[in-house]
Image (cartoon, rainbow, N blue to C red; front, top):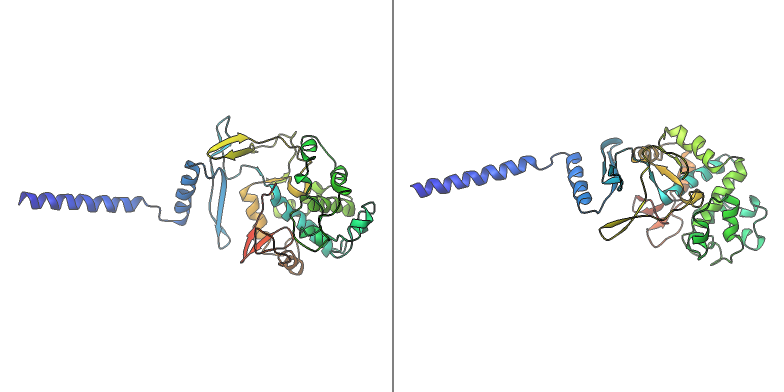
Length: 313
């Protein structure tokens, strides 16, 4: 009889333990996301901020890991990060706004807007080619000379000159080849057409209308509250990334933002706040097939209804 009670007691303990364990398993989506990202952070797979929305409502946002590893400053939902090539989305939006206003055309040569661009190349390259990485212009960040310019301030005109005379890698429109140079040219054209800096165009045409108060064109010398430090990762270890003056990535990669502001940006893409639907459709039209996605539109990789943002240097 005593053995039976002992077994019953052990069984009850087991049931209570299992039941108790189930009670602490995350029940809501937010709790499940929190648990998952905590694991990613614990094993150094993820260091940054996250925001998750469902049906147009934010259901979760938080920071993980450290914004500054030397001072042990944690990431938060409003930590400001350099967004790299996500900048190209914003450049493409500015271009399409100018197209809608009749100030630019997608199918005319770039020499229309930059008369001193070498005609043997510029007469064949269109705005469309630049937007879709099909211009054939060599990628300036992949040149052996890139290390010579990355640390010092540079003007958009000087940036363009760094690849202006290089031969095309292929005839415009023949193939896809990711080129930061093309998006540098787009920023330069935006300035030429509007008479304002690329930075001012971002503020006036996108950031201010959408209330993106924690986004901007990054400047190394400015004191920017809650700006994260930059790191490279090798295996489980982090290292301070190499210095780059932010005038160098320019309209191809110089924006900083937060997950909260990027959510405002995302939500605007489902509306006509910045651009009419006709031209929004042009941004998300699948024009070419790159290696990293099913198709590429204007500043976006497109894969089976999923928009891919790129952080390619």
